Image (cartoon, rainbow, N blue to C red; front, side, top):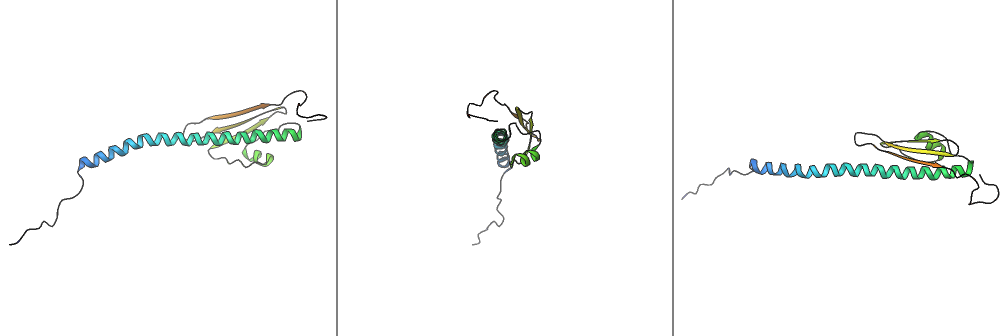
Length: 136
């Protein structure tokens, strides 16, 4: 007795199974991509906030040492004159000062949503309550 053995059994996925997998992947991507983009924008905002806080602190130190705030410039001028190392990655930083006040701005540019973060500070007028004698 001979038994017949099928040499080429049909294996694989049906079209319906493949379509179900494609739909599941599309649904997951529909949720993941916008969340990822929001996370990237939040990271840019945190970076801008940290850099502006550093610029604010350095401007305060500069004013304490020199009697006024440092002048106007872009990232290269800010890094050179104030001794910072701000990396302009997807952001543009500018500083504008007018003696007793200053404004530093971070602007996000790129294909995603843009935003602007601004810090404005004005020196206290009158005597400095933190020192006695001659103070800047």
